Amino acid sequence: MHDFSGAFRLALELITSGDSTLVEIVLLSLRVSLSAVGIACLIGLPLGAAIAITRFRGRGATIVLLNTLMGLPPVTVGLLLYVLLSNAGPLGILSLLYTPTAMIIAQAVLVTPIIAALARQVIEDLHAEYDEQLRSLGVGKMQSIATLLWDGRYSLITVALAGFGRAIAEVGAVIIVGGNIERVTRVMTTAIALETSKGDLALALALGIILITLAIFVNAGVMALKATAARAAYA
Amino acid sequence: MHDMVRDVPCVLPAVTEPVRGLALSAKGLVFEARGRRLIDGIDLSLRDRAVTAIMGPNGAGKSLLLRLLHGLLKPTQGEILWNGQPADADMARRQAMVFQRPVLLRRSVAANIRYALQIHGLTPPERDRRLDTMLRVARLDHLAERPARVLSGGEQQRLALARALSTAPEILFLDEPTASLDPASTLAIEELLRQAQAGGTKLVLVTHDLGQAKRLAHEVVFLNRGRIAEHSAKDSFFAAPTSAPAQAFLDGRIVL
Image 1 (tube, each protein chain N blue to C red):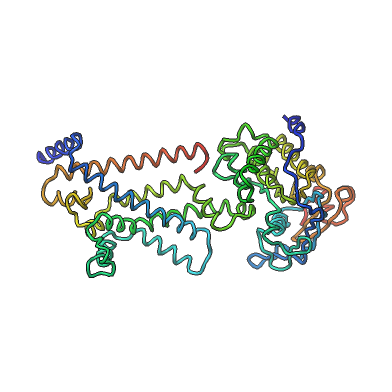
Image 2: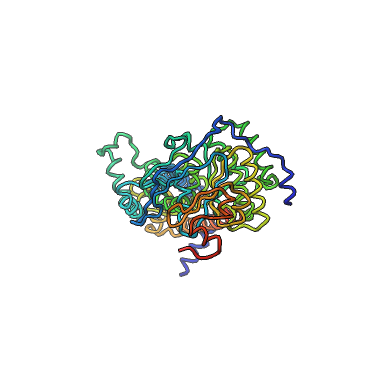
């Protein structure tokens, strides 16, 4: 217990002194996860919207699949990407294994179904309200999707933040395709796993505190955004 | 406030197309949903430029008929003809509709109107000009930058109507546009409708409000159980309805 409080004090010192190792890890984490969420939004938002407003055979099955993929185990994604990206794999020629790019791809794969599935729900509700009006105005399908995405923007930002929460906290996929290489692919979660097993609790705790703080900020941001949207009756 | 409405000169964007003979007709219109026949063989041809009120008891199929005419629903049988032709993309652009509960985009008042103008492919300068006009005519200019959905019910419906009229439709469908509005808002809407009609837009209006039909309509289509019970000029409809359902309706009896 004495050890623990000592480690905690050390952790706070690391944070307040702006320890360079710590900062590097945090920045890489943010870079990887924000890029992954950006890519996931580019794919997932239009995909979710398209599924929301079109009727096609197998639509129900597609939605079930999408909802299932929301719970994709990160280690499985990591493993599949590892197989694809390893030197012997079909994408081995790209030499992406153990790079931040591989980690971004892994997290994008994890987060895209989350964004698509949540966006589908948001857009479907909005579509129920807008459908007749948009058809009456003579709005085409593509333009409908653009309109619905824009008018659902506040709800969709919270969707993106949910995706970011998943990406930044995930360890299984990035540790497999990133390899947790110091100063290259070490992010907060993989560092916590490593330092804990090494017994260096101070750095692990410092990173844990930052992760939780980040989570608090993200959720506070979501709430503030919802309040803003409600004031303008945009939610 | 009401006088202000009347003071506004008629500056709605005029219907410019040289189509003074736009005739809308329905032939053998049938609509079924879940095995029930809700519109049961409607033949109808509407007078050009006149204001047509569609009346009838609840569940008679008034809103359905309006949606079929506007093209929001596909008839199970029969067809809708515009000057003898089935509706095409061009015809869809020449009409507009206002719903009972206004559907406003989650944007500002001005952006709602600009959206419709953009969809209709107007050039940016023309868009600005129309927007200006519509905001003034609908007396929404002081609210232009407000989020549309924080407006009062009456203001929201004025905006929905202004948006519909901004594209200068040749025919405007209205589904109980004032059903949930206070008298002042209703008056403002009716004034706008009169201006639109004077500017050359044909109005097809579903209404429950006998007074509104008397004030605005030139002819009445009376529906009962998915069929046209009576289609006559306003004066003769209200003075001497010929069908039993219409007589019962005007007497205030429940029509079965």
